[in-house]
Image (cartoon, rainbow, N blue to C red; front, side, top):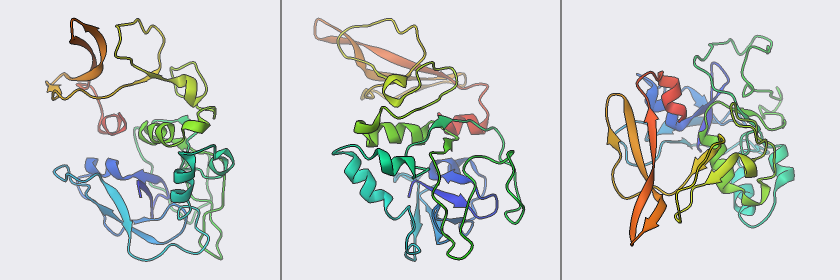
Length: 238
């Protein structure tokens, strides 16, 4: 699984974000859709395999997360809008960055100060009640949804600083024909070049396999990431 629920705060945690923690509680997470314990795997920076969560025991019967693999497979062939509307984690509705995670007592009533990812569970079964599409605390799950569900890019998406309000219009692919002005903020994307990224204390420069071809030579687009003033939380989300 790409994410799991923190057993104390009840927030959804991306597996990749575990790399920010000085220490990871390997027994501190559970399936986002039921109470089955989830164990973090490959979360150390030196691990080559992508960070993820793994279950040792089966999901509780009826857990929505267990059925998400089927929805993802169906989404490659056609629209699965109805399923996405009732699966909070598959297609986030908006980006809501957070700098600090508040520790909350899961026994207390839920408040508006908690994030959209907190649990709404059925006490009898332990299953999370189905709700609408939730907010994402980093761009990562939004990008996953864009790639996984090409037939549902008409769904709404709100990203601070970006005017378009759907997946289809908020994302823009960079082409490999000619350099073009991009005056409006979008989520730009393109294939990475084979050349390694150049790092400095102030910024990271990433060359893309897109740009302007002239005399069989590519003048590539470059993504320059200014990270000198980044907080740890901001660095994990980009």
